[in-house]
Image 1 (cartoon, rainbow, N blue to C red):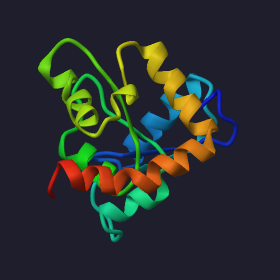
Image 2: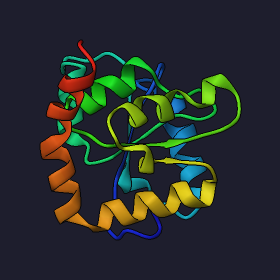
Image 3: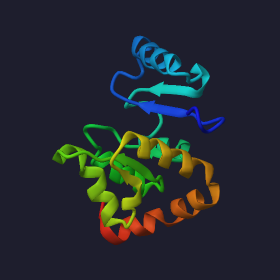
Length: 146
């Protein structure tokens, strides 16, 4: 967020529709130097379709230490590259496993520094990002079935 001017963060989580949690999350990010108006927090369910949220996202950041599973597959199906932080336990390697199947293991990083750098590199290279997004569903369809 501090590296890419104009970057925005959309956090979709259980309880995210509740103002106290929204304030808590935004205030924590503000303390780390992120402007509050660059952060949107929403709940898991809304009037908008769950998959439609991916149309608002250029890059998804996998959760850590518990990587996504279905959410990772959904994001990739919707054309959104996922950057995943890899650890040693099984729950921290799900993203790597999925990305490896798609030939995108370069998006699975072993350190926080590598994770942040990859997010910044991908977010600042619109040409590569657009190409990756355009190919994502075909890659996904060739490996997984929803």
